[in-house]
Image (cartoon, rainbow, N blue to C red; front, top):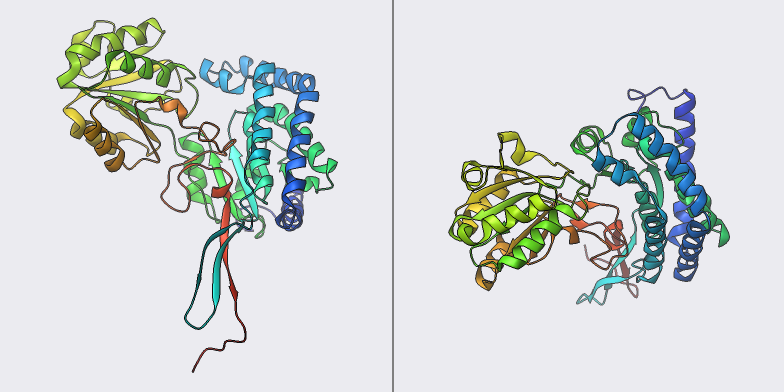
Length: 428
């Protein structure tokens, strides 16, 4: 760890103290009752509602700085809070209170021939470090989910949302204090210094048990390269919608436009539309017209460009670009095999959707595409923990170890084996 940063620096001392405080808090959370945790969540939600003016004032500071930096519209959308979004944040925290507490749940149990009774039981991971960019609502989602699942959280939000995140954190800690739980159960790194990220990735002298990065390719790449503790990877959302020849045209138009344009700045926004050549005469032009009418720029392959002069020619880079903006790439493919080949080559294993009325084709897509979330006849914007009934999420895990898809309460637990005997000894 000393090779990463100076142990005697003021920042290092502060960060190590934060880690120790989080460890102590995690021990209290691990044995906290469900009723206590749920009451804390309800008080957090009320504090968010009561603090709406302070949160908006803090957000205004962040927005002013972002405007001066001339950040793009999609980034500004992710950063912006308003009364409706703040109320949704409070409702999300309350929804977590209504979910079953996973801690102590028996995942499986069995008895051995020698009479030993074995149970696999859920338990907290410990201290979770969450590193995220721009979206201040992640502060509430991540803090609440970690607390309900018995974990302490060390949050490092983007520098662009620093003031907003601090205002939200104040509400979360008020909820903790209101029920006698330690405020150190949810902490925010008190600096925008990027060295703090490196310190978190080092594990803070063993205090951090897991890192969850939520952001762009640069952030996730750094975390995966430097982390000395386990990581839940949240890669970019190169999400695809495949319009099969057997699709209902109106449904295809509705789902494609919603997938791309409902919120362009979220990771579940579609970035590539794949059109079955065999159905192009029926589906292609209505989809193009609807996207253009919605204000979306289209970058297509040669076949798509030939169909409409409003389509710009796509470059090789377009197929691997997470636009997070009102831009989409579009390609013609040879049926479901062509669609799956394109997704396998260019996708990020996040979310893919197929639009088709043919059940056999849909089942092939659901069974053979290996991304974390696969949808049939539904918008990719449903790639969200709240929409899955998880209350909220820390992110969409795209790796293949431990957790995939929305990272909610159960995904923030590990397990242990409780073994009960009556004096058994193992033979020599």
